[in-house]
Length: 349
Ligand SMILES: [Zn+2]
Image 1 (cartoon, rainbow, N blue to C red):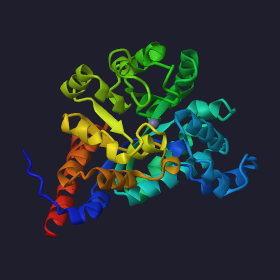
Image 2 (image 1 turned 60 degrees about the vertical axis):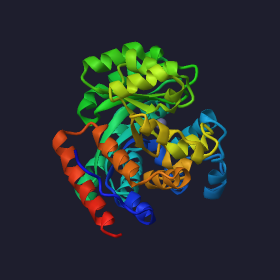
Image 3 (image 1 turned 135 degrees about the horizontal axis):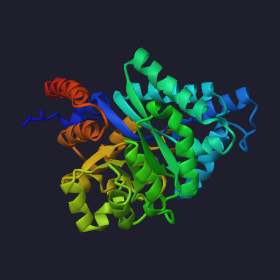
């Protein structure tokens, strides 16, 4: 068992920024900054219902998940051509690399675009090319996860899967996002079963606003390998035990939970308790352009609010690699980088 060198609290913010980490829960459309939304709107001649960048930023005062989704879909309306998806992907990966994200598993919502007449290949090829170029030029590894919009029908999800299958080698799995309450996992049982047959990785949002029953459904009906959010699991002791027993990762997004009023105060966030209970918790940014920060900002604000320490930082970074869909060799490589960063900061007594 590896002993983690303790790092002084004074160096904790620097350590959090410097440590290598994987980001496993972020929606690429949620990384569209107001500046890029307006730049793309101008390039593509799209008219937006906001006067300018500041006017749009002011609208980011959300009261719940739905109030956010309304603006999120308006923002995504500027994405029309492959180059737009490429530019969005590169912008996120450049920003993530600055946060020492060494690997990102990125959600994209094809239905948000295909409904507007944008071709599936436009979406996937633009994003895929961005991932490939970022790996070559910035050394950041990444993969794409196709997410179904759960407020739409399962038939629509099937049609989306069908349209994406010719590009099967360009995404590693499927997810389930958008409006949670009223759209339980069971609604997508058949399409997830099909994706499982196809050998795709399976993840699903559950237990963000929805009840623990939705997490049970994601596990037992969808066979989800990770639970995105999952913070409502704490309300169900048997579920907590199940998540620990099976080592199911939770991709938690602290600033998203704060901004969408899932928690009223970051100091009250249950991430430290979930970690203490032995769950494989990770920290992620969800929709960083909308929720007030990229992944390092999530770590920094969470640690400042809850008083978490360097041992917990270590565990979260380790979890992010364990929970990712990469090879053991790749994981071992990043673990050595993590050890080196901790050793460097521990020496600064
Ligand atoms: Zn999400």
